[in-house]
Length: 101
Image (cartoon, rainbow, N blue to C red):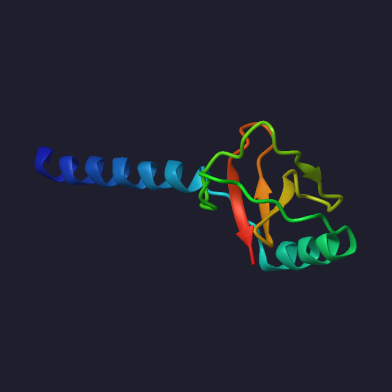
């Protein structure tokens, strides 16, 4: 009986770990991306360059960069345009959560 419990417990730990990993992921639905693109098109910003910052999810945007609110329901992020790409940023951590081309 103990032999069967060990794999079951290991499987449960694995599933719990997967659940925790996906809980941290930011999901911006295709519909939200469309609405965000339309909002950004109606509220254009000048594109800036950020030397030394790669536009990758998880990268941090410097405090000197002004983040702009997105007036879109269910979107708590702010945005900035970097190298002509719209970048969604978590205002609390200043981490990039999505790069929209």
